Picture 1: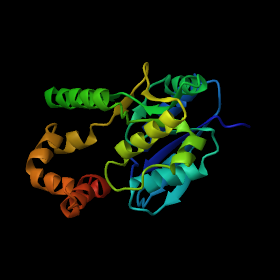
Picture 2 (picture 1 turned 90 degrees about the vertical axis):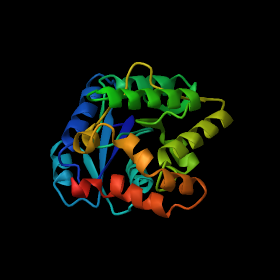
Picture 3 (picture 1 turned 45 degrees about the vertical axis):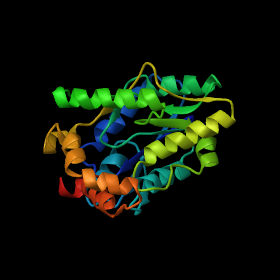
Length: 246
């Protein structure tokens, strides 16, 4: 049976969230006329993520890299679909996401794109984060969240940018540049969006990222000038080690 779309889910100890992510993809697949493959890339998992993924019909790829780009690329390498969609394990997609992606790529006008981001709950600081995201995406056109493009396109750009931080922005730039060469636009979904998890805000407070920017201003400035030692430690704490501690 032909596979039209492969959805890649990188997952490090995501037993609390992986099922609802898979369920959202299944709901989107119900209204999508093609066939969808779900791949969970279990990255250094020590919980039940792999078992839950298999129990819910996903295929599992095991990966030990400590770099989210390499984790996503491992999923892309195993994908059978002509179209690749990526989504993080604690997030969800809306019902017509796959149908819209398929239609945009079939139009021949777009190289790929991202998706608008909406939080699963809101407060004043989360609205501030939301507005900042919308302004940033609107000014740069580097939409992230859910990534989507043809597999041949990801192969052409070498997959996700193999860097530890801001790999999403770097990858969006690569897709946008490649699209320009092909006479196609890098865009975003119009009718659907990413439902963004608030897990870190729930645990650490809704002002989390504003506090981090203030508390680590020196680290961010030094990183801008090439000294990434402090940035790598911060990234390990907030992303690569977070699931082990929570």
